[in-house]
Length: 337
Image (cartoon, rainbow, N blue to C red; front, side, top):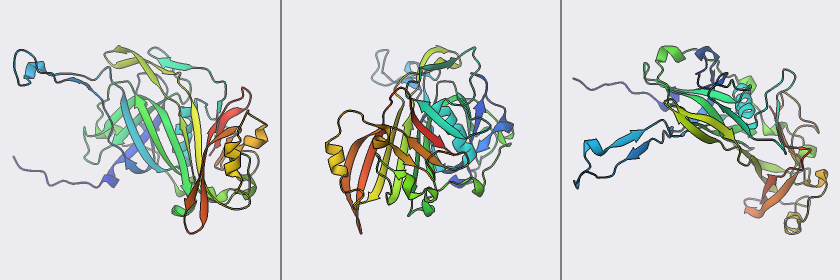
């Protein structure tokens, strides 16, 4: 036997996703799309292990060890540049709203009901994702996950980093056992192009608005959507049902210049009372009033302030935080890409 001299850069690994049609059936690999990733987190496989000493010994014996991988939720984290095709799939999955041919605008209703998908059911468009972490080592080294749902998605930008190019980070979960795919089965994928990039610098000041205040000089923002999943029932292939029943939340943080437009944010934060008009609490980041396909924008029709604080730099800035609230009629959040 001899050691292996092979070595690979982390940049040689790929993160591939595809919309999955049927629960329990891994999507055809020629539908895979490669995300433009900066980092692929180590998947948390979370097996159930029993490591208790038994059988009258002070040392763990081989027959004492137990592991189960069926009743476990696997978690995958990834971050990178928010190119359009990959962002489309993640937004569709976390909001549960299918993209139409006429629009790439995704929303979550303020009165949206619980959704479920499981064994024996076909998924609605975008409800499930198949994921492959493609290894540079080749055959039998890929990690593949079926029946994935996006439970957290963060979109952010900073004018001092990559010219305000929109970045993302996402967390996905699955309750199904890990697939075993060979390298040959995962070679077909659709790549990403520079033309798919989106920038916060395209926003117009009139529609750079936080908590109803427009014309903000903004240096950075970060918006996070969370849609938790609950897994129940179990078979030899993993959990049987995925439910989206917990709180869907959207929060947004922004760093803005402290000036005559923003100096009264502390008073606004201190004097919040009952929900007022939509205009008074709207948070919007866009190039025009209405969101439009093929142009990145965010609209949270009603928000409450959750933090206002000084940010001391070369000039005084403010850190603002808001959370979206529903009113039963307006969408909780809309995102266009």
